[in-house]
Length: 335
Image (cartoon, rainbow, N blue to C red; front, side, top):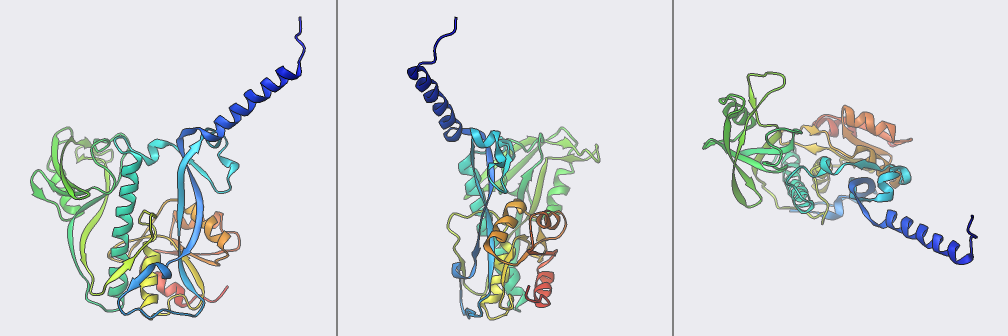
């Protein structure tokens, strides 16, 4: 026998549906969302000894990615936000790394990228910049490798089996003295602490007789700048604004880098001037496009190809090095 849908029952069903909807919107999932942030001028955030601010209407801009926990609704329907990408928790937080550690690592990477960018720009301007290799920086971990759960992104490996590690070649050579499956003793600099770590090596998938620990690494270095340089981006983290920083340092010291135009740039910059790929290019491109900036410098290769998919009418300029970025801007005509 059918029960009548009385006003009270209809109201009760409505309240249940509202509660479910509220839960989907408010309760967090285990996934993360990458969202477009906004393009921001670097100049107002930079202080350099002897700077000569330009007033030609141009400027160098950097762009970050908004990373936050997805709600249950957003996890089910990530396309509700333009330019969003749903990322599994494991992709952002490897085993043993919590949200606080991830943020601390990103802020350290940002601070390091500022130093490297200033060093590259000042060298280009003819200043004497003193650098010293101090270890090997862990950029990322290989999934299911011995390093997972032991090492963290932004760790600096300073020794292997008691022997100092100054360069990537040192790390490869010392780990390579082991057979796959043997234990190796590392010391890493993690923040202000030295942490001993023992892990078991694995076989290189391409060379089964060679031992590896499962990390992507870069050079860590001590940098002594001849001028005081301060860049304050608040809580923005990560190394991807390095190219923008380097361009702006030159602009602040009197070099007309932007040609009176607003220029956005992304790319991690290395001490030799190489511009390395970065993540979140989809979100960054959309953010720059929304800002009305007509030119976006990005690392050549996959980053540039991804940027072109979302550029609309914006000009994408792929670059492999700081030198190439300067040359491209010097020949760039206003859009």
